Image 1: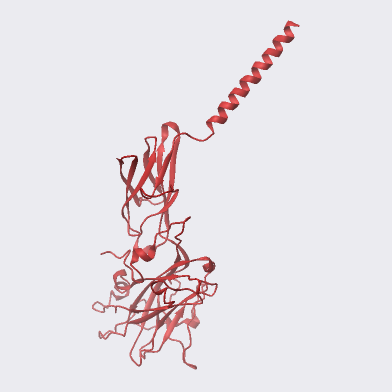
Image 2: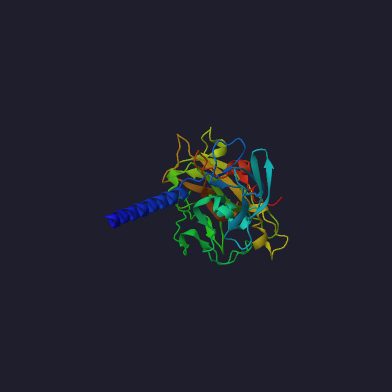
Length: 357
């Protein structure tokens, strides 16, 4: 009888030990008492786990509420990190993290890059990891590297090919016939193309259809465009119109519902004919950003496309060289806060974000 009682007691103690260990383990996996919360400003109501920093780079501050001493660190996939954690300072209840952001490259055409800001407390295996984005996502991308006709030099027309005979890309770019019986004035060269001609013929190029665009509310159309100069130094008209067709309006003129914007371009220099094929594409001369918005009356649709037009030159030459056309979406709402590209650029026109001052 005594042996049976001892056995029962041993079993009971074993069960209590397992139960106690199980409860202890469960508690360790429960909510942490420590906290690290990251805010965009001292006035922000909610902490963030993902944020966007300016494409132009520069100093950027984040505001942290915490009850632990954390160690900040940065991680991305670049050989040379594009963010540097400069310092952490106390300002009352806040820990202010100062970052030095590298400007997005002129060559990347606002392609998004992503890194992680890590606020870690290694000794207690605790931390907060914030996703940091710079740049925005593309609906359409084309650097026209697939155009391999003739010469990259605009002063030579040898080997250039009409748009109807372009090959090498699955993208379907189109050009409009404005006068019955005439051929459109749109020609591919080596890595770029031009619209218009020496007679001032109205000409255009229209982007392909873009999947998913009907779900967007804000778009940035970035491209390079520069007007022709003859070898003798005579300058073309340098006129270009950018239109959105099939839904959407120019954000600068949203209240008016305007769907086009006219640009006065710069002419490339022929001072050094040997280098004109590269100097003509300097961002300061050729880079533009145009902003589109979906409105209640004119939302983006599956038929929304962008048309680039050289207006009728009335007999005067109006040739426009173009390259690097990108249509990028960005989102600004309660859930997502991409960079406000329209505000950053100061509206449509020359690229004022990445161009070095």
